[in-house]
Image 1 (spheres, helix red, strand yellow):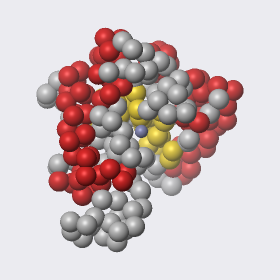
Image 2 (cartoon, protein in one colour):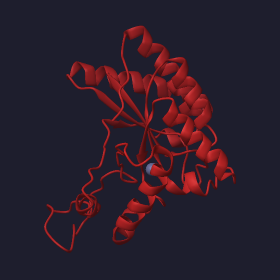
Image 3 (cartoon, protein in one colour):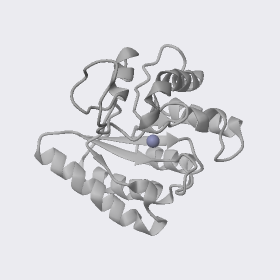
Image 4 (cartoon, helix red, strand yellow):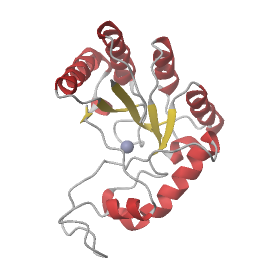
Length: 217
Ligand SMILES: [Zn+2]
């Protein structure tokens, strides 16, 4: 089995991605950035952003929290407030009862000096302590694909990398958790993720052929 997880949304290609997932009856997990939901700098239309997230939720996908502002790891002292704000944004769509999984921006990093307020293990990311203090855990992945850097024509290569990864996990007795991106933070890579949408479509065609099934985290 495989889990498609999409970070940094919503964005301009999220609706197209939802179309692809629906065509294959695949369910995914969307780790939303609160700012992309509530302020929607990618389109200037917060109502559209809310509508996109609400559609994902209504179609059976899980909405997760990827913080409000996607702060850099060294700003861990501001992280707790940003996690709470991000969760409130997600819950404005998902409601109070649903479980909202959490994923750290940039994933877990090595961090020389560790956590200055206590001992969490040598050179571990101090954001792990912040996440623990909130009673949360970080949902990591079995592979990242650098998909946010890819031009649209790289979609077949992305799909092949995803297929190869799931096959390697399967051979090792593991389900795969794939880290992908349906939007961004407004950096040099912009917000559009055409390679991801097309790559996921091609991946799901092959997954159907092989009898692989999706799960949410
Ligand atoms: Zn991210």
